[in-house]
Length: 111
Figure 1 (tube, rainbow, N blue to C red):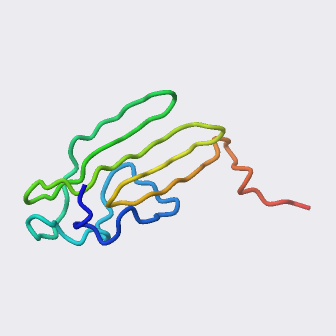
Figure 2: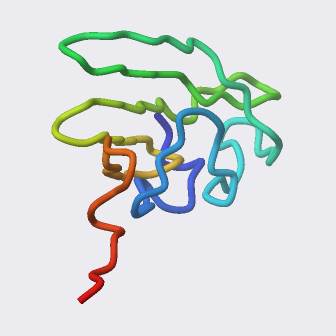
């Protein structure tokens, strides 16, 4: 992972969890070849363990294949759907969504 390629390491992204893609606004340019271009996503893997689905992949410079960051996205069911993301480039985030057809947290009281 390369802190010199990003504007801010592990920025707080609130509840924005990316299963794929790259947060290009945080990419300042490759520290090796000095180019600011699109990135390649390589070494993508999907593992399931203990009821969790974990997606990992590497962000690489399109021009020189320098490894910019390692991305990890996790999906699990614990009472509700739970999503987490951790990546030097894309940031850290987590989100929880109800597994019920109607999310009780979103319902308004009729009284």
